[in-house]
Image 1 (tube, rainbow, N blue to C red):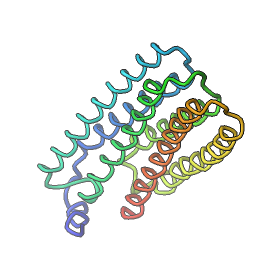
Image 2 (cartoon, rainbow, N blue to C red):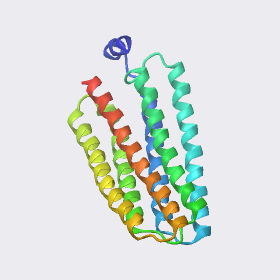
Image 3 (cartoon, helix red, strand yellow):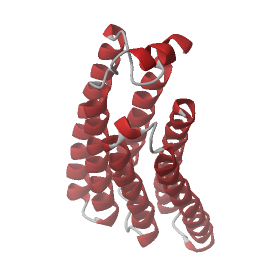
Length: 216
């Protein structure tokens, strides 16, 4: 909003949001690393344990998001537009929710076997989370390092394109070669959840890019 931009010029910026965004990103990274582990596991109980640990991350993330919103309601000055402060928190929360949903599907569906393709997509999501941590560590430099932020967003976008290719190849392979109809449905739903998670990371990067453009 215009009033926020005017105040940002003349008043010291409110920076208490930045550590919270970083906490959120680090929590997402933790959850994404657990997701990689669960895609590699073929032990049913280990999958359940890892799913519960991802659920703990989701609970932590919800608390961080609630804190950001509470601070937003009380803040007179924000580091960027109020709507964007809220949007960024919610988009990060959505990515975490998607990671949780994927982990939950592994624990519920319990596929007979896993696949390197599933792990590969999860690893790209983890790579996105690492980029997100880097971005959140440098939020205070957004105005001065717009190109750096744009490049980081491009990295996430490129990862999503690679995940799309993996998704298409593996989905095609499933329908061509999987003869167990129940197993096909299990793996198809897990694969779709992973793809949706990658899409959520891309959407988040688009939101970050939008804020960078507005700050320029």
